[in-house]
Length: 408
Image (cartoon, rainbow, N blue to C red; front, side):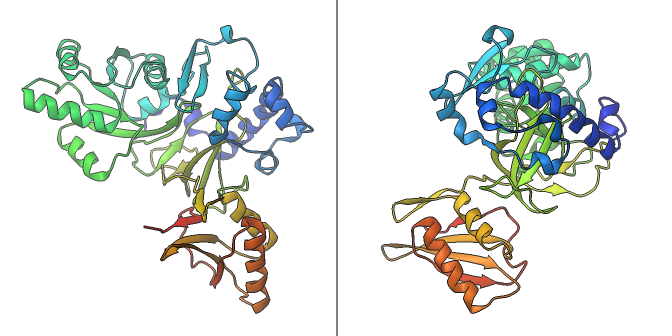
């Protein structure tokens, strides 16, 4: 519990914050060399963005926007400066979204996550993420090699050939989805193949419920989770403390109210927004569409960066009511029109053959005028009629939901 990848992981939180934001203006200048960022950030003085309040005033770029943006201005929607040949590899993910791989060491920032999971230089790692077109396989491959590990580029599937590789190379580590790890272990047990060399794992890309964690542990494998994306690589990772996930270095992570770029109160559930400080391919306030909440304090493992609870659902709660889309941004707009309110939740139900909407709003002053004003705002913003229910402060769940579709 006292070993760390480097001294950056144990810096004083204030020192880390100061160092990240001292680098941000230069990263913003590099981002502005890309035409799409130049347009989005028009009028922004990079020298003025030296703290979280200033960063929060910049527009968010939603990952859900990227397919349309990439199609309109291929391949990267105008968000990448420099020639294609300056990158190492060029990938695609479903959408499609196109991703370039920077050329510097550990371009996907995964070596820290592997180290926290117990991987060490000289280990042999079985990497079962896909190497075909998408970056997943290369994210973990590059991260393991940056740590000094040898990698078996196995990819998913073909368990019989994987058993041959495992028995020949005796890998101590596994990287891949938790689902495929179980498939591999089950198939080995059924076939009487020897896979006991695998003692630790870093898993990602799928849910890893406690029942599966317990089963993997019972088979002698110490498995840890990492949270990341094909755009950013590893965003946060588990440590031996097993208390949430520690945010990776060289990233500024914000948690915002879904449908907005406004940071939530400490401990509230919201959408993950990430700013990366990679000068070759910076991301400025990329909203991932995933929900989480921050944990207070620092990790018992000694790493001092911000901790998050992990993945807690999707932030894009857009739904269709009476044939019209209702979006989190619209609920946020209602909140802006009535700034004295607490949490808002638009509940969608069905009665007979009709869709019904009820806006639940937290307030400490449930006056009659507020009810009628909210009713009018709901209709004006969504173009749909609905009921309004005023509830006490702290009544609505802290789960990040602003639209709850309860239709069966």
